[in-house]
Length: 188
Image (cartoon, rainbow, N blue to C red; front, side, top):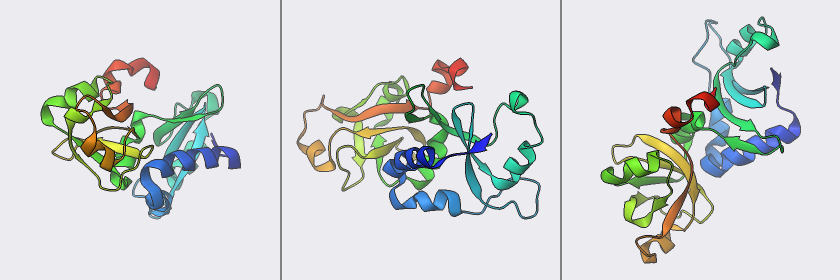
């Protein structure tokens, strides 16, 4: 396990910024609440086996006592680097993104299941959308009871959604909570 280099950090921050915007600073600057130390420090990002982990500094210090081949992971895995070097957020980052998201989309209760099966969001499934959402923005998909279901990329702006056809795709699917069941072996 090692800290991310400058290129990796830039790629991770660009992806996170797409969803959180200026709230990105709150992810790393907030004081850590986990770990046995009275002063656990702050949160940091670490790379281990092409996966990026979000963990408190106290937890990272304790993990250094474990040999690298025996270490499965530390903290919350938020994404992974592919063989081609690009970074992809995984469903594990959903709680972090939901807490700090700048743009959100709410689904009608009867259409949540379709999204959880890995489908994109058509306009007919849309209950609400954050104002000023632009095409290409990262959005967190929520249920009407404010439970985060997943995240994706806005295919249309909030203004275009009002004029779009009912079958037009509004949010392109990236990850959802249903992946815990569908891709159980891949996630860890």
